[in-house]
Image (cartoon, rainbow, N blue to C red; front, side, top):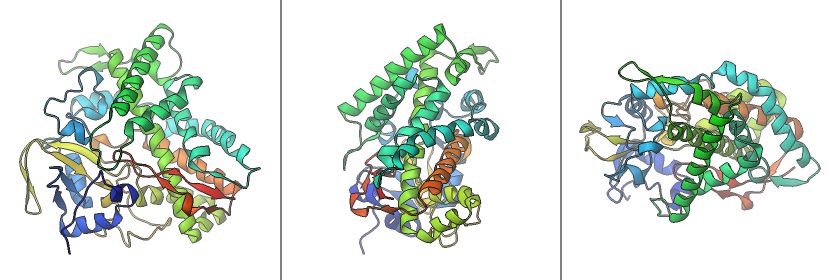
Length: 398
């Protein structure tokens, strides 16, 4: 048997990497890619440890392969919270986290429900539609952009820009000119957006960040710059839309292939929260997170050299039999601790409560309308994106 090979830029990764993950966990839990010169961890326990070890693994050099392999990479004025280590990261996260507590999210639930219904109700007269294109893709960005204060007319543009930024062709490890253009366009948009909010603030997160003060290492209180706020907005806009879109597309396919689990929801909607967790575990929208090794460490007999990209493959950890009983079984009644679908430690997704709530409301509304649906398997199309897993098309017959 050939040695295991993990290539996050390959068609195999885009389509379904679970078989590769299984071999990585058993044969190469600390995998080194000879082709791309990165390391990848795949076991649950190891990934939790690395997430917590900011002394040996840093986030300050970016998160993507092209950033982590560029010795001259400097996010500079475009640096966001996701590219910070403690203690700086902690000060900035506190500013944003106030808007994403479970209590705050409960206040959004009715608005989310109304918005979801506005997308689903027009589909009820049709015999079929695309669960992603017609529903799961357009609605999440409306919610996160409303929280940020982005005008309604601009919200779908943010989604399309994000899709263009994340897209990768097979074998493509770095951003193309088109992707760079999309990233620059979004950065310019949010800078203009922040400048407009300074002139005319409102009851939204962007205005709150403009008024906020962050404590420096010297104990001084300073305002955030326009570039810092724009970076936050871009990060939240992307994460707040992509995660839910991919999770709901994945959920539709998983429930189609596991109809007994869907019938459990139809019979008892109290099982929806557990269903959301299992969807996120089984096919996590974010498959890995990047770090840069700072010091030489040793894992499973492998020397991890300093200055090298390290991928924390949480998509593999979520199927680790050392942590989960029968991990390849899709079971919405699974009674185990939470998976690593939203990362872990200081960089755990700040919008996780919002994403979970959106997914739960969406599944309940789908259940209420279409207790019986069929996915047209021949019409499925998977996304080709940097570290994101899911579907771009999920046609259904109802």
